[in-house]
Image (cartoon, rainbow, N blue to C red; front, side, top):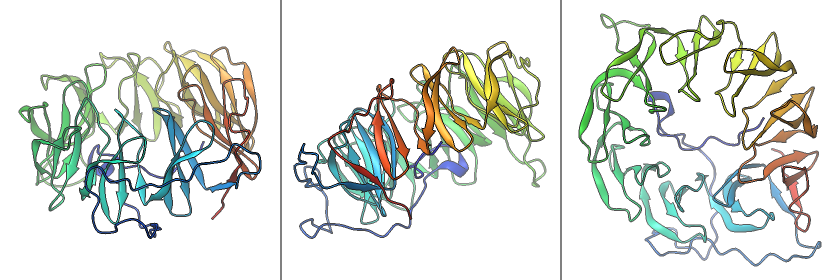
Length: 381
């Protein structure tokens, strides 16, 4: 399952910001030096509804968010609607999904925010930025120190953090110079002390954290979970890798194998899987001996491990791979869209983007094509 190019992710230490080295392709009628609020950076021509409309060549299309999907052509990104029409021209060298009506985009080595018409809402002046979450977004202007802004671009929390995660359940993991993580609230107040060598977002009241170095040498001690008061809830901190809680369970890794625990730290499956996903709709995708399928929250195998790969359920359907082709199954395990695609995305807002041979399609949950009047050609590198 192709998840597209890396997005800007402000998370723990290795997931702060994915920079790209993409060559820029900016129309001549755009001011290349300044993009203040109100600037229209994108002048997309009206697309004909005729079947003779010029095909759009695309390398990859991400899933839809707030009615639009980010796509990549050559080394630049733009946005499509659900008919396949290019509504925001592909001029950006990095672009994120829309969240709260805004998307973080990169132009001329600077980041800012646009709305769904392509209008610049927050000036393109930042050294880095994240998607909005709970009304705030992390952004950096100088020295790559991050603070938080609101949707008007107003500084809410001063830029003093080396790493800054998205707010989740009222708290955000931040990193100060020296490598320690702690958590702040939306006023910038320190809620959980800076004790951790790595830290993730809160989900269902718990957050994954990793303790600091012991006696100054590697490897780090392992992962565990804390609550919103900073109390160690699941310990000892000996997991090699962990995922956030979802539907009461979290995936944990020990010696290259994965399993699941509940919020008391009790194992609900054996630590035996080669690959796992988070629970969604009561099911989680797992892989064992190169075969993938689904288990329920008791650990019981409910959709046979017969696929070459499998993704998490989204909107009642999950992408599964048989040999070299992808299709979709429902929660009963029924194949509702046969495996015939080379690349797919999870369903979002009732549609999914898929590639069959040399064309991209936007399909609904019955497999019907939404972009019948606009041809989207696959552009291989």
